[in-house]
Every structure is written in structure tokens, then in C-alpha cells.
Image (spheres, rainbow, N blue to C red):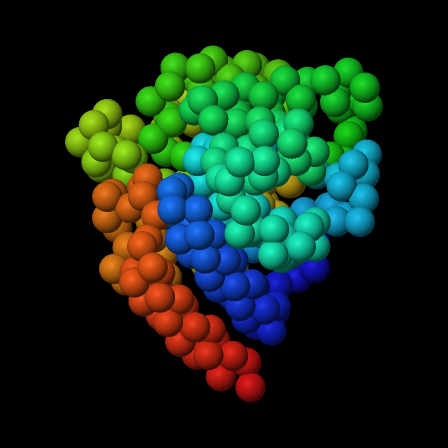
Length: 289
């Protein structure tokens, strides 16, 4: 992973903005889907697929690729949009989201889109899947394996007890190549996380299970990239990055409103959102010049 430069950060900001525009276009075309979390995670997905991951869109089954496991499968529009912009399939296919016969289901289905590492939908499963995959990789390759297992999780799914079993096992086994990224956007479908089931102090919880813990601004490319670089230097325990994000990031009308967790924009709202994102893209490009 190369050192991050101002030029690279601008490139990543533009990629994230394009991903957000694709998310809006997908959701309005589908007429259903999840808006807030998908928009909020665009920066992290941009950093992963356009700077951090070892992957090859021309060889999606490359044996040496890093694995990405999306646990909170309802934010799959950001995954699909990122994969398309990275060259795994045509951007035009994004418009088939949630349609009958589409490879892009409302929750990722690996048998229909083999680029995916897992199917997801039931919350609280992704960390267990990543831990199992990392243990299998250790059996195959030994402790010196160069593959990293990135698991993307929502904070709301930390209500699920299965996560704590996986945290305990990964800590016990010192799975240093498991890197969890928790989308700490403080919302879930029924409201704010701290009103429904308080999660704090999340930092101390993970730490108590023998994880290396970092907390970052999930919209700062410097912090995202540096945190993952640090996680890769830890060889005696798994790592978790608690990424504080703004749900609905990039569209002022959607930001920080839990009501946008599980609903798509209508045509008028989508046009407003795209106008705002286009203006943001113009601003980023002007900074590049």
C-alpha cells in the first residue's frame, strides 16, 4: 500500500462521490432499499477498493486476494456500486438492483454473484464467517498467510450475541489477519442505537476480548488508510476499527436521520440528492486543479 498523497485523496473523494451518485440512482430505480448506511460507508469502500485491497477485477477468484465480508448486507448498494466502478461488472447493471432475475439482490447472494465472498442478510453473521474463513486459511497456509479478512459490520448488529462469541474466539486464536470495521453511525431501523440498546463503551468491549482497537473518523481518508496500515502491523491479535460515520453522508436532507435507514428516495428526492452530489464533485475537482 503506497503512502497517501493529496492527489490520491482527491481521487478517492471523487470515487466516493461517484459511488454515492450510483447508490442514489440504483435506489430510485429499484423503489426500495437502504439509503443511509450505504451513503455513509462510501468513503471506506472507496479507500478499500481503490487503494488498500489486494484484488484484481479481471481475476475475481484470484487465490491471493484479500477477502471482504459484508455482514450488514442491507447496505449492499455501496458494495455493488463500488464493485462496478472498480471494474468487476458494468455500471449499467446497477440499475437492476432488487429486480427479478437480477444478480444484484436486496441482500447479497453469492450464488448469483460469485464475486461476493459470502451471502448476507441475517445480521450478526459476518464476523463469525470471517473468523471461520481466517481459521481455515491458517490451516491451509499457516500463520504467515498474507491474506487479510476484512469484515464490514453495522453498529446496530452489535446487539446480536453471535458477534461476541466470534470476538471471543478470534481474540483467543489471535487471528491477526482479521480486520473488522464497524460502521458507527448510531442509527438502526427503529431509531438511535443508544436509545434502543446502548452499545457504549464499544471500544472497551472489543478491547476486553483481546482485540487491537482504533476509533476513527470514517470520512477521513487519512485516518481510514492509516488505521488499516496500523492494523496490518499487529501480529498478536485481531484488529477492529470503529469508524464514526454520518448516515446519509453527502446529502444534507438524509444526513443523521434514522428514517433513511431503510427507505429509498423518490424521484424528486433523488434529483435533489444528485444535484447536491454533482455540486460536491465539481468542488472536489476544482480543488484538484
